[in-house]
Length: 120
Image 1: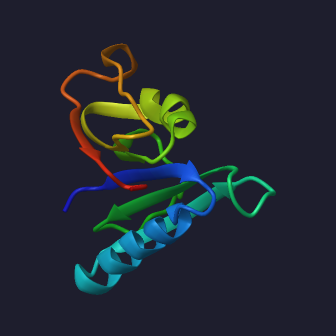
Image 2: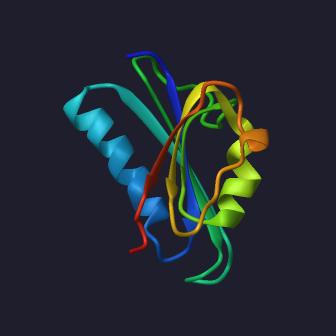
């Protein structure tokens, strides 16, 4: 499996950090590959912007920060607007269809989009 850079973004209380943790743990345990997680969140417990950045790779991950996002999971409009420009050409966008409206101008060519009812 080649290196994958994944960002999950949304509001505190939506399980953003936990989602990143589960993705990384599953990759390490079930696929036997390396993973690293960095997280960012506001001082409030719920309702503030947060994100989880995950890198999974067959090689040891020596730099834990994303250089370009392969997969973006956007559970809030604010998170989408902040990180959509980092999504690589041919990347994957998974978004909450009730809270996020992707725009062609925001995305690199060839990005696959998948709307889901995450908050519902």
